[in-house]
Image 1 (cartoon, one colour):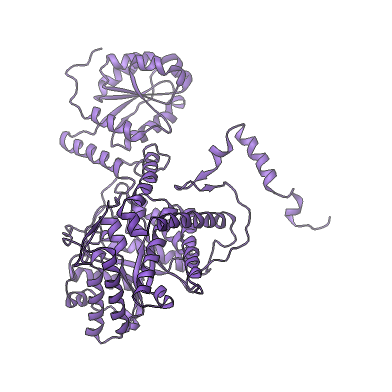
Image 2: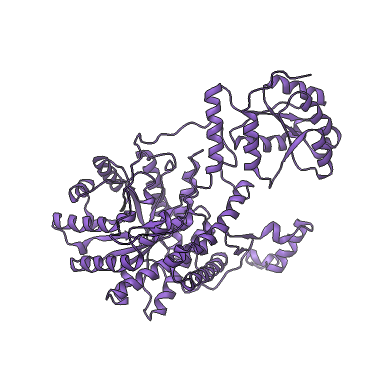
Amino acid sequence: MEDRPLADLFEPADRTRWLGLVEGVLKGADFEKRLVSRTADGLRIEPLYGPAEPATQPVREPGPWRIAQRVDHPDLAAANAQALSDLEGGADALVLACAGAPGARGYGLTAASVEDLDAVLKGVMLPLITLRVDAGGRGLEAAQLIKALAERRGEDLSSYDLDLGIDPVGVLAATGSLGAVWTEIAPRVAGAAAELEAAGFRGRIFLADGRPYHEAGAGEAAELGAVLATALAYLRALEAAGHDLESARSRIAVLLAADADEFVTVAKFRAMRRLWARVEQACRLEPKPLRLHAETAWRMMTQRDPFVNILRTGMAAASAGMGGADSVAVLPYTQALGLPDAFARRVARNSQIVLIEESHLARVSDPAAGAGGFEALTAEIAEAAWAAFQAIEAEGGIVASLSVGKLQRRIELVREARTKAVATRREALTGASEFPNLAEKPVTVLDVPKVAPPKAANFGPGSAVACDALPSQRLAEPYETLRDAADAYQAKTGRRPAVFLANLGTVAAFNARATFAANAFAAGGIEALSNDGFADAEAAAAAFRDSGAALACICSTDAIYAERAVATAEALARAGAGVIYLAGKPSDLAEPLKQAGVQAFLHVGCDLLALLNGALRAAMRPPSPQRTA
């Protein structure tokens, strides 16, 4: 027999053949609803892509991305110990998160003098690392401290790989106020830039930060559009102050949030580089690599089951690195609970070391090149972001758009849609809305109180400017509020709010919906009291009375519901059930069940947050004086 490649023995695969097989599996179901997904901005994501011709893609400088670690302890000596431990443990970049900056999350450095800053960075050889400053409204002050530190140490400022992180537009978006109007701030910062350059500074002065928009719920296109408009505002300010465009662009860096949606995150970072290259070409400049930083998203972090955050941030870091980030700062997995301890910081650092040293993700300059899905989504995000950028420019620029609230309103619409998706669990949050663990063990954070922020941003003196501040939200917060209330009730009464599962029939009949119901109620801190099932309504009602629960949820198959659900609901109501739920959505029985006492149906796609809010209030009411048989 003639030797042939194994692939030749099979019919060639193509999209037409694949679609035929898919239709057979779907059995008439809607292809769009079942297999096509969309981003927050409505961009289409197909279930299958073919190979693509690699598009011209700007990439980062050769080599692995920098492993950045935040230095945010309010105590100077402790902050110095953090920095040294991080560098010894494999980090090669530091982020100085200063008190009062939105990114400091209520903590941060309190260095007020060059002596303080020298104490924080004692033993740190600044010419050997990358340093980024996150000082919020105190960016100019921090820049002067860095300059004074170089002089104090007798080091050339040009030897520092330094990003000063000055971002007045980001401060305006995040806080709603500045110490001066933009027309006063722009020349002031540009003048400071000239002074720093005269001292040898060769790093980045301005930072166009995407975090305020991402934390407010913006989609990928809105975040990139706002960042691009911000970077252009800084480019114009430097040019107006006498900087030529060639040098001005080298004074601007970008920071994007990286979340656990690896498909969108990789494409978003790739799109950012394309967008900036497009601006450079419009300025008649030959594109150069943009300094692009990443920080894992605050929006996706959870307080409950925080170990899942390790998976989220690991995926986000990998995606940012593959997307072309120059440095990645991973938020420690306990960041939403307080100031992370050394273990949490080590996990954040080591996750990147594994990605770079063991998984070799940084060996290829653009791993997504030629992959049909990534190429298509990168192009779509870039075009949508360019449209968002043009809308901001048509409104007079980023400051003008924020000042009249137009950008905020557009982001609000996406945030509302995302909030609904979280409430209905179309956007699932593992450990919070899905698979919650009521018996989770607490994790440790440092016993350090939050720092009182400075009274105002210090870009003044001048006339203040104000706008509606963008909210900084984590997606899991509504579920965490319910869990906190349930825990407080347990601490006060010695028992957790509970729901009795009125399981009908055999385990095989009720198990799927009972498991679904137990997980759903646990998302609100309500314990599900299960059993082996009941053959009749009165037996279920008697067990409910003995359980001590205030709530009941009927669980079984639609066939058994047709036979026994109405009678069971009536029996549970007579037994004193405060609220009766039914797991599922039997439309043909909806009215009879409601008349029998069922107040709500727990099913896929229901507004779980609304249901749990009502359930928790009912579960925490004082018990009825007497339950009747």
